[in-house]
Image (cartoon, rainbow, N blue to C red; front, side, top):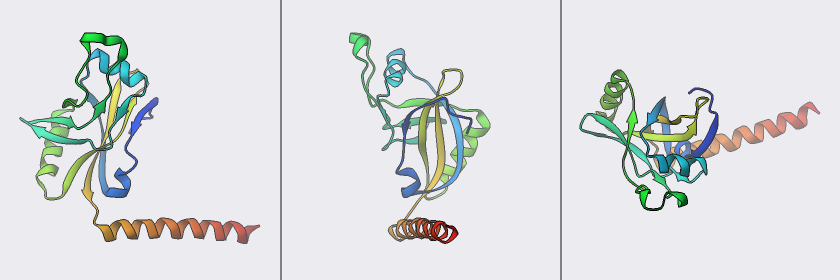
Length: 154
């Protein structure tokens, strides 16, 4: 991922719920009122996912709240939004989505250096409950190990 200019929304549960296999950056088609709402930080991508619709990749269940100043020209909050990807990337994603257990998950939504809204996507495989426990146990062990080494070095 390129260096993010300003984070809008982040999916913090993605690393806990999925094994992240590959990440990529995509543009997203938005209406003017959606961009204004994003500048105010009014977005939620926790339940969002990417899916194939007619050979194109769309971001579904991403919630961008209405912008107060748009009045009657406002957008729908939960509508599907087309992702801008190169043909080679689309083919790679479509091939991965056909595999069993692979999901396209947005990790973060941000403005890049040029002020464009970008989505960091991950091709991920869902974790089972025992995988989540193992991840938590490993994280806890690393924390205890660092604490012990810090005390030992002092």
